[in-house]
Each structure stands twice: as structure tokens, then as C-alpha cells.
Image (tube, rainbow, N blue to C red; front, top):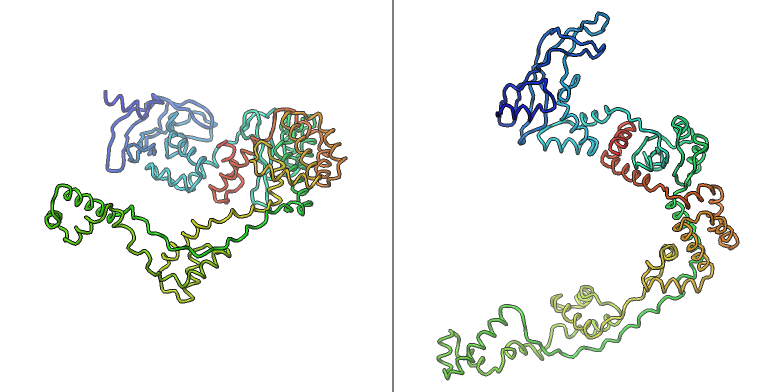
Length: 531
């Protein structure tokens, strides 16, 4: 019964292997097995043979068990090929689901290592499998990725295309994505018109091309897939509009900060009167004083004399007398230092003057009076400055001047996403600067066209912008005219390049995992197979 369970555990995927024995050492499990088939097929010619040439033992690493490395010692046979014209006289039998040619690992372990390599690449993958008691070098993991077969997915109907940096600022590649299935289709080594055009010409059937406003991709699409509809991505359209708005704000930045709030008037600080000490409320001393005061008065209430109370509580008679004369415990916790001169008194006028001038940092004030001869501790200065803060609270500091980026963000943001203060400040700026007010109106109209998919009204919007003397918006509108059909299509159907941007971010993660040193072939395999 146990043998049957073990047989099913390790060789459940095939009936052509018989389990013999299992040897367990400290850090290793060795499984002894043998093949049981009567015939095998020659790999080059496909001829079936029953003529056994010889036998030998194959050692295959398998997935670890209980943090122990597992090795399968499989007694396999070498057969003779009966086909005279075959280039191979003998061949080794293979067990489906367990062995493969020249393999020193089981297919199960090989597949697991390949998945680890795709997810984590070399170094990180090697550390992981080593923790799983299956030590493999990082170079082996990378070879597993490179050995993956080339994928040949069907030509997508809706193709997303975008560039990504192989070496930022110098070398760029191209990622092609099936927008409908959200899977990568291919990766090209550059972003030239000829490379993209050739790919499109070799893969007919693309009906829609989602892209940014790159002129090279637009030209490649028109040459390689002349019947395809081009769709400009809405995100890039809005980003280009935001850049035009920022340039407009820069031209009128002199009007942004006219309403600067007047600086707060410095408070004239009068010397603080000596404070009446308050009773201490925390610490071991207040608790002990209150307990003894209550005990003394309880005994006094029973008619016990002071001498007897002192003996019972273990206190001096004068101490008991002091507790007895105090009506409450708070009288014993305050007033001890009231009225006494402070070591800080000669330096208080300087502190008051500096505080009125705006210097409220206790550390800086301590350093100033220390240079004037103050011999005390910093804590005394901190307590005095704290009293000043309570007596003379500072006014709120003036609002920060709005920057060009602030105003640009307020104009291009949804009005209901602005807080009350930002909305009020934007209103004041727009009232002072009519060109910015008109810019905001154009932005609002374009946002409505984009959100409500009213691409057919884009020409009217461009005409309205061109009639308004705002040069940055003119540049943006003229750029839309050069790629008008793609922009109108981008504002009309539901397609976009969002899925392509997502894959672009994933490529950045893969590059960082490999420290930016992966060759193009390895990077391409990881992008396509990790999908």
C-alpha cells in the first residue's frame, strides 16, 4: 500500500516508470526507479524500436521535499535504431512528463525554475531556489529564459504601440500590445519607421492602431497598415494641453502674486509677571504627598495625637505637623519657589525683545544669551519661551505665493477637486488676468469633449482657440490639425493606450530587476513570456 502511494506521488504522470527503493540521508532523498516500456521512438527519424543496446543510470534533480534535495536515479535504456538511413545508430528512451534530452532535471523542476527565472531573473531567482533546497546558478536561470521558444500570437485586431527606453536618452525600443487581450505581442529593437512598417506589413489584419502622437509611429502605421484607423491616446492629448496651459501661465506670471498677504505685525512682548506655581500633578512625589496627607487627617479625625501619628506612619513629628496644618495636599506641592529670583532674570529683556522680532526658537535664544554670559541650562530658557508662546500666540504665517505649476494644476484640475482656498485663489487670479480666464474656459470645453467622447466637435474647438490670441494654445491646436483624424478617433471610440502604458511600467520593473544590464534578447523573452 505504501509503495503504491509513493509510486503515485512521484510518477503519477506516467505508467512507464516503476519505483524501486527510496534512500533518505541528512540532506538528500534518493529515489531509485527504472523504466518499464518495451519500445522507444528514435528522435531523428521517428522509427519505433524494441532492440535494447545497453542500460545506464540517469540522475535527475527533482523538487525538494522537507528541505531535502531530491535526486531520481532512473535506470534507463539505450535502443538501437532499425532505420538504416538514420543518422543516429542508438538513442536513449525518454519518459514523457519526467525526462527530456540532455536534461539533468525532471520536467516538473525545469518548468518551476523557468517560471522563477521569468519572475525574478538571475540573482534574485537563484537566492529563492537556494532557499528551497534546489541550488541553481543565476546563469542557469538566465539560460532557461533564453531557451524559451519564440511566441507567434495571432495578429491583433486592435494594436497598441509605444516606445520604451533601453538606455534612456540614447536607445529606445518598441512594445506592441494586443489591446483587446491586454497581452504583449512583440518587442522591436528600435523605434524607426522602417522597423515598425516592416512588422505591420508582415502581420496583416490590424484594424486599429492605438498610439501616442509620435510622428514616426503615425507614418509607420500609414505605410505598413494603410487601412488601419489611428487612435491618439487621450492621456497624451491631455498632457500636451497641460503643457500648453503651463506655458500660458508663465507668460502671465507677473499677475499671479499681486494679492500677497501683508506680513504679520510683530507682537510687542511685555515682560511676563512671575507666575504662580501650579501644583504638581504627576510623578511619584505628588502621589506620596497626597497619600500621607490623607492618612494624617484620617488619624486626626479619630483623635490620635501628632506624636502617635508620627510613630504609626514612620514620619518625623515636624513633618506630621506640616501635613496636619495643610488643609489640602496641593498646598504642600506649590509655592516653594514662588517669588525667588531666577538665574534667567537678567536676560529676560533680551529674550522678550528677540521674541517680539520673530525669533521664537528656544535653542537659538539660549545660544544668544549664553554668549552674553548666561550660566544656566537650556531647559530654563525653554520653559520661559513656552510661557511667552502661551501669553503671546503668533499670527498664522502668510500664505505661500502660488507658483506657475500650482496655477496650471488648478486650471487643468476638475473644479470639484479643488479645496475652497485653492478655488478662491484661482478665482482672484482669473479676475485679474482675462487671458488665463479664457484659457481655463478652453480647457473646460476640451475636457467635456474628451470625457463625453464628442470628437466630432473638435474642429469647432480648434476654431475657437485659433480666434483667441493665446500663442501656446495656438501651437497645441495646430499640432492637433497635423494628426486630426487620429485625435478625433481618440476622442470618440473606447480604445486607448492605457494598457500599453501599463506594460511600459512593467518593462521598467523588469529592467531594474536585471540592473539595466540585460541584452535585448533576454529582455524580450522576459517581456513576452512574463506578460
